[in-house]
Image (cartoon, rainbow, N blue to C red; front, top):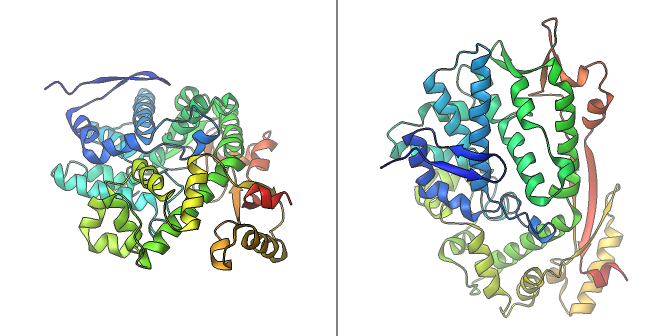
Length: 410
């Protein structure tokens, strides 16, 4: 069988599958599942074109990684064929553990389990099936390999993951202000003492990258309507889970039912291998299909929220620089009790507060390093003539209040 396939990507054009192992990984059910998980969760409710998936993103990131490794090799950086293949696999599988709707339900279906950890567990399972073929890829993914720059290409503040998702999300949402010159940035990266750096002549491309990332967060990822839709979905899952654990029948797909019935934690994943296999069956379709049943459920909270989300009758939402006070929320909860004839416990599903934060660049930790012409390496925030980057290092937090529009507007 010919496994040297070429895929046609709308962002980059033709993408090559470089070897048989990567082809077999892409064909595996774990990876094919990513076709059924949208990259931006519910954002297509705001930007109708945002229907691309984690499958698209993973392949695009693999393509950019190939370009980055080839560029580094052209600058004399030694990268063995084993390292090359391993880091390609690591970036291909970096999002393997995402659950339905990507980040939205990360802490609703189970507790204290980040998608990166699930990706690691799934990579370990794949490694067993491929008889140790992912050993080096897992070592790089976990930052256990002796050459840190390979991990930094996969996960850092200027990694291949971000270079793809910003360009791809900008393309599919039509928010072209968020587009970045990923090709130029890739040409500007280098390695010094096994650490990833950017050559000084690429510093303005980095400034544009950070500016685009900040804009995409406020305009796309943290768009107020997207936040509202995500809050509603989280409350729907919480209510379905509550009813299920109270012994009330809530029709759902078999995989989703297990996560509604149990409060699954990280320890459960590690103790019971079957849970990971059930998780690997979960995707966006499980949730949407179940919500279609729930809109007719006898429980008023579950049915109302489900129908509102299906019909895009979303909560109204307002952002504030200050925390939302108890007086405001208590008043709205009372209004919800009166308007919908609900007890307080159920009315609380309709009035929600929280906060979102945005920081384009965090100077501490894994910072972006600039290789100056005279040979020194400095943090990008310390570059002399880039005050914008210093400003973008500030974490901006906004607090929100959301609920039915007829209540918020009274």
